[in-house]
Length: 162
Image (cartoon, rainbow, N blue to C red; front, side, top):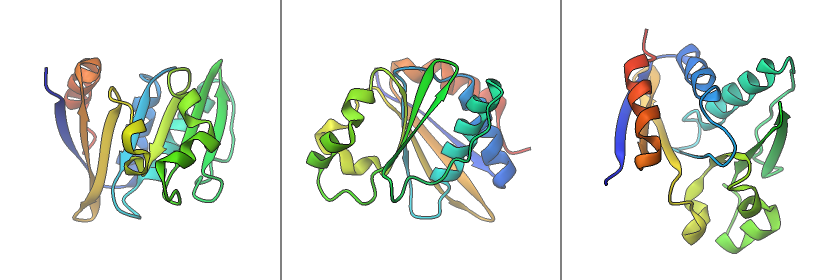
């Protein structure tokens, strides 16, 4: 079966926040979301909204900084470990071993920015989200295998452009 794809407009930052909150309630341990797009496309914004929604659901609030310099930030939300990784500064996929990311994949919810830096270590069953500029807002293009068909169908029905 081929990947299912979906493209949604996100006309403003509030729509990106709504998308993050919507995804937060539907992702769990072992899920990997690969966030790609140019600098400033909204990868960290979307990840931050998702993480903050998961924390808030547990009555927690935590600052969610960009992991650009730390490379990885992790959070605990109601028994779920969330890894937020920014691989922009990696120069070779071999550096992934130093981050411990390969061990987190399969047990934690992993949000990975700049997944092109993973090379052959890129998970094959990940949800791909490519963000790009779209007028005054953004566009989120989703792709995923059979595992993600239900989520993408529900996402298409929901819409985030209102």
